[in-house]
Length: 168
Ligand code: IDP
Ligand code: MG
Image (cartoon, rainbow, N blue to C red; front, top):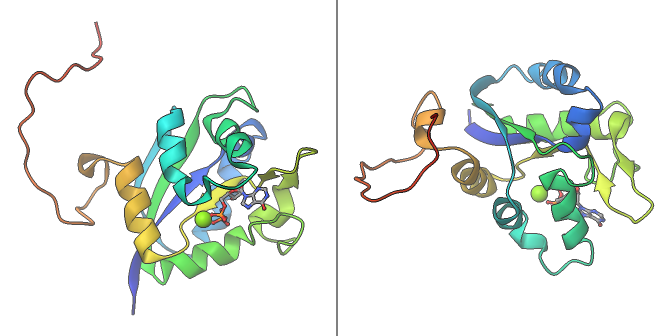
């Protein structure tokens, strides 16, 4: 048994195409446990950190515009953390290959993805590809208190003089 965590993001195209329920149903076939879920307004900075490994690619700028929602005019994504035996491979299998035209047609990306005329793979979902990536990504997208168990070591911190938005 290899218990793993994985980060799924339903990207803006998945949301505007009204695929959220369908995608979660497909992912549930893996029989994993949902540990966290939230709708996120993605900032450029977060998008750039998430896709840091692609920063030298010619499609990087368009990829950032896609994931922050500029392309689909919906500035939100749905982020989910799943946990379970071999979670990463099980989810990647249901999600399909990166290129939606090469992905198995019954996979999520094969069924719902497309390649834009400018060449960006709009492939509906993100899924972590290794335990190292999953840890990095989950820590980037979720605070410890937003996940039902401490998946990684935590520490107590005291913050002073922190400005944040609160309900008025
Ligand atoms: P993954 O999402 O399958 O893990 P990555 O290589 O990590 O694939 O790429 C992240 C995202 O960048 C992809 O999901 C896709 O949206 C986009 N992307 C990756 N490679 C290409 C490409 O060659 N052309 C256009 N877009 C790409
Ligand atoms: Mg990847």
